[in-house]
Image 1 (cartoon, rainbow, N blue to C red):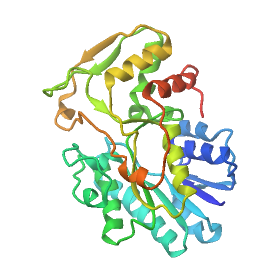
Image 2 (tube, rainbow, N blue to C red):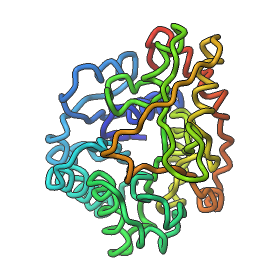
Image 3 (cartoon, rainbow, N blue to C red):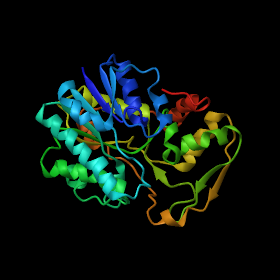
Length: 318
């Protein structure tokens, strides 16, 4: 199988390359952009055929003739406020790759995001009728929603595969700086016996640190991507979470346990600028994924953090 992976030096992209290698797939064109020298460590030791810059890809596609394009490349910063940049980078570029794939009968798999669900008041179902009514809270979420809606408008959603990733964490995210998971940011302090800081709650019904997220380990996430790569008859836009929300307090306790330390948690004020956009609960509806025949069993939060700690202790890569 000949595969193009965009965003290949990034977090999820590099883990997909590792998964492909583990499955004996080495005929890979890795595509990314030279915007952060730290992320290139993510590709060390991985087997690829060649590398191309993101801006070169469209021109070389006819020559490369892939069997599949796994499109993970995007600006994933929820702090990016340049809507025009996000539209060009996340929507227009995805559209170009999708059109090429559909025209040339190439499998096209791409990253959407749970950011498309906004504040969650419209639910977390990945059924097409639910996708139509979602209201993202930031320009990043909007850029991902635009592409999902373009597919639906043109009745193309059952010819490609999209992944609405929830809170993914795990090895190879070290380059993401402020966008790293809290697990990655906090581990060194936790291992040194320092308190872990969590936001206070400002919503009735949620105690401090009891805000909940659907956390999914990156190794589980890429297993889902691989399932759909190898089951080309299964198409659509799917949630990629565990279907089980857990609290930030649970995350903290699991981190301390993995580090062999007693839990110490401090609750701090949430910045005013994000209080009205803060999600207190996210949980993927897994009905559609299971209906597609994917029976993957996800690691528990505790097991995933225990495995991740092996990498975090010496900042190693997967």
